[in-house]
Length: 183
Image 1 (cartoon, rainbow, N blue to C red):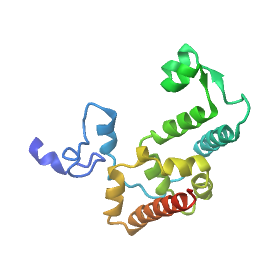
Image 2: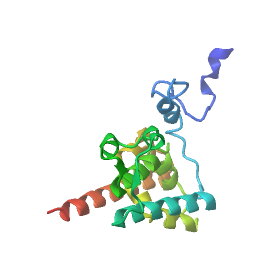
Image 3: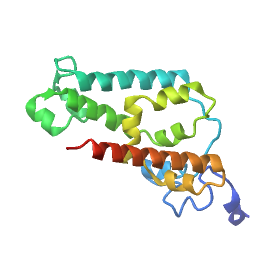
């Protein structure tokens, strides 16, 4: 009987449909179906660490750029890639525009922060990746927070819940340090 298949675990857990997960017609709905799945012993593959290091180097380089290295004329293809209207109006992509584009792109990777929080403590690349300035700024981005954080806080596994609390502490400390350094 097909009605008894409600117990099947499709990765979304019980109630995925009610939470907006399951077989929605947009990517957000599909991402919600994995919000309450917490794999353990996640490791950061070398290629992922390398890519995050390169992106972080570009992100940092754009912040420190006072020359034209990170500035470029706006072309028709860069307009298609989401160059902000202000940059298009100026006819140039500035270092700050480059930084924002990198941050927005990485922040939009579904479940990235959740996955990084679940990396194994025995994985030496985990600390290196979490210390990257780009990753730290991504972790502060509103774009990367979702229902997964609530599910992590409610998780039965204490390690998962602890990681969620650690993340909230990071957010709290970061917001208090940025507000105390403001004039």
